Image (cartoon, rainbow, N blue to C red; front, side, top):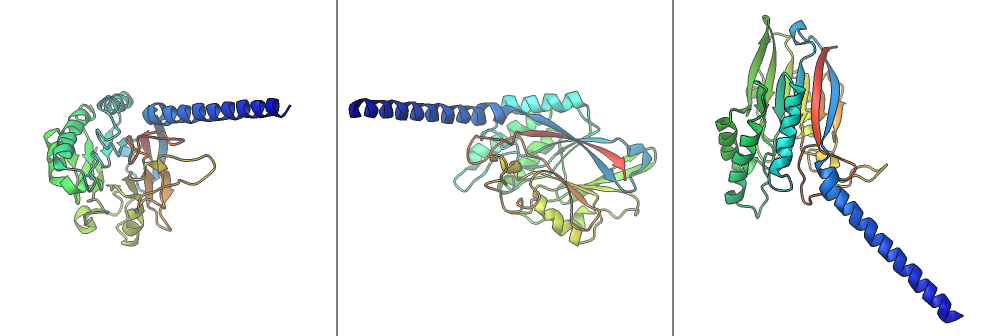
Length: 291
């Protein structure tokens, strides 16, 4: 009797272990191959004070955190580009981390990746395309800047420009990476009329607090950096978030007591491991409307 009971227990244990192994394998396959390539379009309406009438309904598509060829293949970036083109936005914002550079990485890998990524992104058909750099771009920022420029993608590095429609305008600014570089808000902010809104491209979302505290009256900041947490267990906060991306993790947020808002895109690529769980990659479409 005891031998039969032992045999049943061993069979039950083996079935449990086999089931656990299958479950773990299935989750790994899902997180590594399915959800990691499950691009979601997130649409939001952003209400902007003093938005000029010609810019009512102005649509901005945002992509971020490509980490090209480190867990983000060329076919997937091309897929994202096709999706952007289908949306036909008025402006496209690319908010950094085009490549992945780490301490033991070398320029022989990162630099060609920057040019390859920029070449694919040049297939975005929108005529208004602006970029900012991320912390992984900073170590080779001259090469990334050259790659973007050669492919017709306008990098705003502590710089600004204006968009005009029927005599009215809004401003678009971009700052340097706040993690390894030095954002210069004084250079990035235009001298403008009080009723002209500013959209700011900056990679690290928590830097929005610094922007708001310096009273530059930025209306909207577009950021990435966090990957939305990348791997998120249901009903729990993100397990691992990068510095300067711990407060504003994803989606649209009001910044303190200011009128400023920050939108955080979950990105396309991955870091550390090629997995996403409960946090799929994102293409954002923001529609500006008057507050």
